[in-house]
Length: 118
Image 1 (cartoon, rainbow, N blue to C red):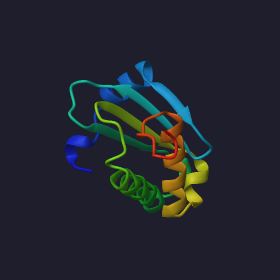
Image 2: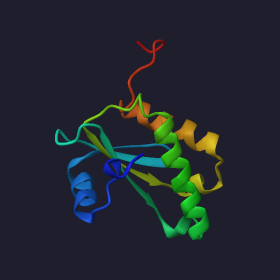
Image 3: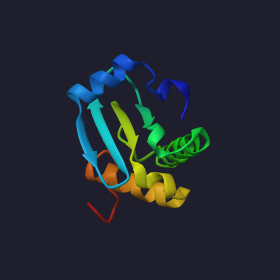
């Protein structure tokens, strides 16, 4: 995920929270808002201090970024995403994070359907 694909500004986060739709499972909440200005998609991450110390929070963010990178071709473009990690995410390994994130993005219809689902 390169720098142009990241959401950093607080105003962008607030706009997505106010106007976007939210989808959730036990581990993650995903807000999405269509954005015609971008060629690909943009992702913002939010991991609360309640989930652990800085090392743990950064580990969760790395797992989420790597999961998004591996799903790069499947994620629908022209959309802004904000991913919020919930408490159970702090005890998960990479494969569990990817599986859970894939699930919530499928519920949000943010991932192109696979051949089996069509």
